[in-house]
Image (cartoon, rainbow, N blue to C red):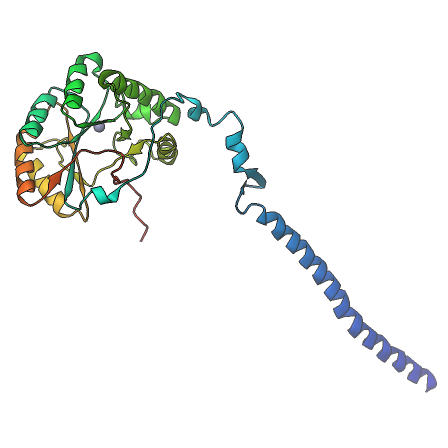
Length: 301
Ligand code: ZN
């Protein structure tokens, strides 16, 4: 009987001790774990403002740009830069039209310039260099008339220029020199062939856009197209496309047209200008103070 009492007394004491000890042990384990997690969070916090991680490696972004070499394409033609001093939205009204002509100079250049001169309209030409010296006189004439001149690649060969950022810059540099040496003015505007996002540059367009902006160039997409480069386009279809497109714009219109040798565009142009003027629109040439449209991917629904 005595033995049994002793046994139960010991059993009860052991149970009580276990009840006290177990949570205490648990607390010790949890607090150790807590300390470890806190340390992990502290380590991660280092990635906050001035660090970033790729996989398990942390980088100090500032040290990357401090050290040479920079990205290989950033080292190409360091003199090919522009000074951007900001947009000025006050200078542009929602009823401003920016006519833009891509792919010239060509044998359409002079007929287009004639129309613009007669109507006292200033516009923007995004030029290629593929015709080289042969087209220099036309390029000089565009500049002499006071229109803006931007770059649009030298060769305009999509598979070549969009194969890599390096290729794009190699080509653009020729375009840059062509405009600078022919007109005496360094271009600061750019229109990517096919626009800033297109089928050929899908893999590299964020790098291309970032590199152009890093160099101080402003690239301009469009929000209205005359559809003049589409097969079967007529002067009538061009007028209709522009007038309908402008109506749908909530702000200034940036109209895509082509200086590509077509005879229809110079025929359509006077009607486009007259109609829009009669509706209270004004025309202006682009410069880097104008906030341009830039293509974006549509948000997924
Ligand atoms: Zn083009």
